[in-house]
Image 1 (tube, rainbow, N blue to C red):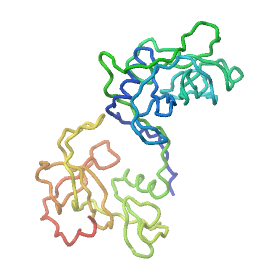
Image 2 (image 1 turned 90 degrees about the vertical axis):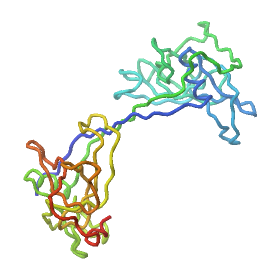
Image 3 (image 1 turned 135 degrees about the vertical axis):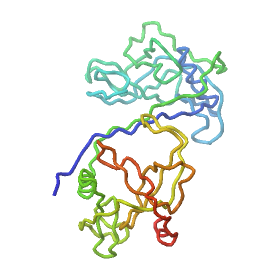
Image 4 (image 1 turned 180 degrees about the vertical axis):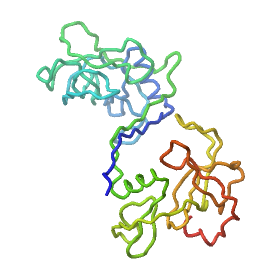
Length: 316
């Protein structure tokens, strides 16, 4: 049995969202070194601001300018900062109730060590040198002496700015170590010899590729390996018109579910060697490998007549 594989994997994409009037004012205010909250009908001030009262669900738009100083309500020490966190040296995650606010804001506190942090300590905002209208305009919080003259006056604010921030792009990213397990390790190892291998259920006798280690229908463990393909049939497909980042494939192209000969589950793959508008259900295809690839680069037409619908309708 081959050694079970592991590999680092990163899932990353930009997330773009528009901002309503409340969030727009909050982020634009940070750009201008102002912290804005929103006041509810019963007089509570919420920071960060929200668009609807969490108690009554009523829309709220009354903005107020709160202080840039506040009090730590709870905290946790972070001894090993990760990529993208506010500071690259050990720091504390803190919930800070800013002066004039009734709720707390989560951010980083720059402190020399956990012994220097305590609930109830007074802190103030350290503004980023360059600000663009994002939560990162607050570089972090820092301890401060209450008599240093910081202005914590709370006033009503109209929420009106020149050149307001109307949208943000946040980079979503997940780093983790992936292990495919015994069954898929065998599948990946077989690809080295340009073979496509599935596993057969001992009860229903269906062959699943890529194998999962268990039959999704019967729930029984699978171990009998079966070589399938390399030819198959297009069952369903879509035309991709948006170019993916770091993917060197010109659009439009076709991505399809392909029922390999001998398999009872369709896998997905790119269709090449044919104009995208000529791909169709029932098209007979075969795996095409590049010289340095450990997996099929794409699937191309075999030149055979199209498969009859009845031969693949159960695999749609």
